[in-house]
Length: 191
Length: 234
Image 1 (cartoon, chains in turn yellow, purple):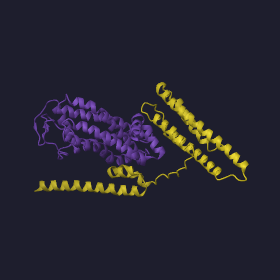
Image 2: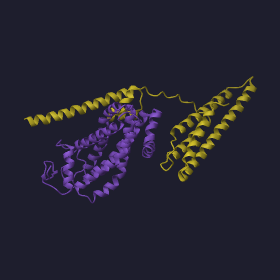
Image 3: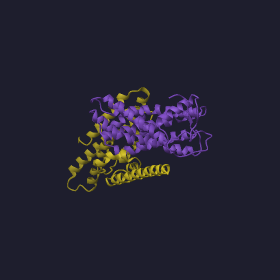
Image 4: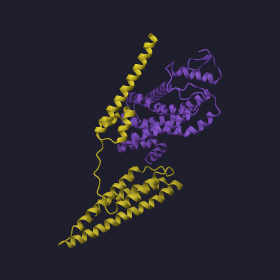
């Protein structure tokens, strides 16, 4: 009788703890869902909620409003996507690149959306302001050329990734990536 | 595709990955990816281990192996945070969890990579040597994961080595006892008794001792669960 009681008690305890754990997972997942966390994080919380508790105390990082795509957005996506695939190749060098590439993308997209703004203004008509419109056209052309030049250098950087993988010149690759990122950032600052 | 990138990153530079996740504040996005990699790696390794007997034991072991990696981490990490704080090393719980997930996922991927070798060895090993090989592979693959956690903790602090040693002991004990509760992972090929979980009996230390003696060929009798009991003087 006491043996049976021990088994029943152990089973009840195990079941109770299991239900409590699952309930904890549901509660944490619900709170993360309310906080606007990604769906994968919410599902992960159902299984391993103790590991995701730190997220409950902090607000989700604000996401920057998406910039309106400009005339070069397709080209930017194509070139940077190819570079990302190359840098992410397991055979590529071990240079940390995610932050620099994200910065590069932000800067190029920002410059591209400014081109889009200029295009919209020029399309609205320039009656009585021909001189200003000409200046805007010239500035727009210079900016578009600058963006294209950066994109051409990004393509060249892909080859440098291959060189670094073969020759082990990681430092040169890293500094080139940072230099491009910095140069792209100035596209938004210098007229 | 993103999982392949993350797998490459955590195998090549796990310490830098922990730093990046903290710097980018991308824990919410990266945690489920690390969990998925951990689960995939452990599931693969579990399937290999279950393959020693085959049949139903393959899915049973595959399902339990991810728990073997996750449960000790979930149990011990809060205690580790307290231990490091006691030793005046200031490390946030989120950084500790990030390091634990990176280390756990790295261990799981390494174990999955070692799976084919273990599978080959299973073909020429008897049961007890197979059990010891399984434990040995887990220990070998677990070491790089533990080093990730150890290196993720900031430098300095009083009695840092006490905290580090205590952390390793706590993680080791929790992993061993979790493994014991979730057994069997390896079942004899001729066994007809395949169960998801065995009843709780004795503890992990007496079981390791018995298996070690049995591997040396020292047997006494069969236990209720078909496990040989060694005949030695304690």
